[in-house]
Length: 181
Image (cartoon, rainbow, N blue to C red; front, side, top):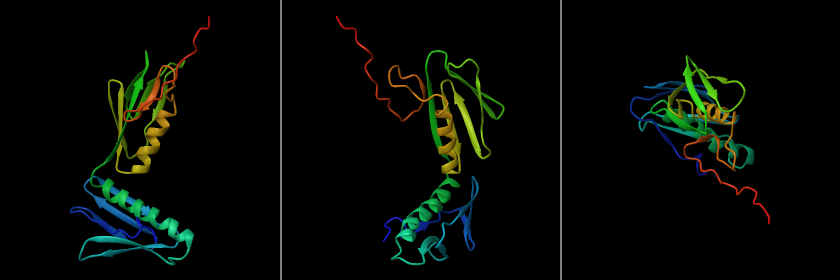
């Protein structure tokens, strides 16, 4: 049995969920999210306790059991996201590395011959504070994917530590070449 899948998802005050055949619509103070269920999973809502429970068709089927915990976690991320947005912070480290917000685009200067314009997707907000960019939004997957795409422009290198890194990330530094005598 899935330990994650069998846990109920509590609905906090101010969050409403509408369950249909293959998806759930979660509405909260920060916005609305729609989550589609993986195949062979269903969701039931208990009105008395304000909890959501994820069920699968056959508990002895390994493929369905693997999707059980995934389905529960996708719905839980939506419930938490409409209540409090997810955030990822990126730090630009390097001489001459700059980032600025131009409309809905990020203008990134990281040592290339030209600045890189990064379009911020709908549903995501970005704030710039000197060398730190904070990406936030209600969809956990979209926030993580956007931060990863920004980091991919210039990942941190291990010798000098220059590049774009998460603020919580530590760079394992390597020793450079040493001269032999």
